[in-house]
Image (cartoon, rainbow, N blue to C red; front, side):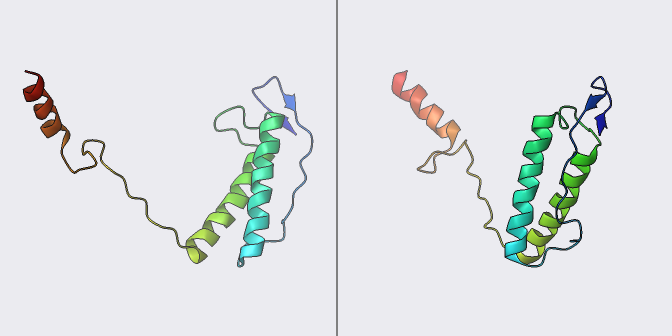
Length: 109
């Protein structure tokens, strides 16, 4: 396989797994496929297949295929806790930043 744009960089052939799977329907398979996806990303990075943004090669296509299957499983079978974001403008005691600034101004004026 070659990556065009990098002086026709020659890549070693990748080994595909889970080619016969189109849908992940249990946690055990999800974990195996997810680990395979992580391995593919590491291998593609080491081989230079991800060195260009928007690269289209065997690695990126396989990573996308595996990622889509994992995302579909997560959507269908997993529940995640929602993230709560704390405003940096409010202190721990609930005082707004402008109120805190006014207190400082009056204390040191």
